[in-house]
Length: 198
Image (tube, rainbow, N blue to C red; front, side, top):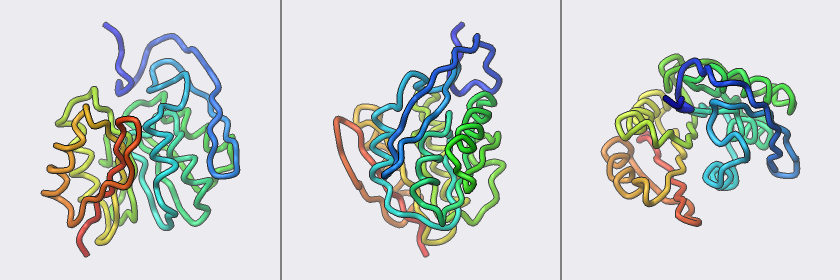
């Protein structure tokens, strides 16, 4: 049976690749591997999320960070931000940490966590390109844990495709968060911002 990118300990044969990602005025270089999400290129949803998230400071968690494109890019673009990149996939976490170091993002670190289970509360922001294939229960679990771990007034930024449930995700987020805003729509991808009540 084929492994999913949300497998805890991938056993698929290594297949290292290199991907370039533009973050502001810097071109970042990432190593990817088999057993991780979108190993051949930066997926368009993550690209749109990186480009849409406003300037941030404080503590931010990248939930389901994969090989670290979103977290490292945001760390590089926001020097006052501390980014905690978390994923259940051990291979992805190792890559994310290596990619943070390669790109000089000393304000980003990666560690294994099932969503935000290992992340201390008091986050100022969360970002996620959630693992849609893992199912709605897992994805909505990301949203609920983000609400729990964010400080009052903190925000969760999500990329989700319309045909993969963006409208129903907005309805669910509205049961947790004070405000849910659609920041951007492009090629079927929606960028949502959910703000926790003060």
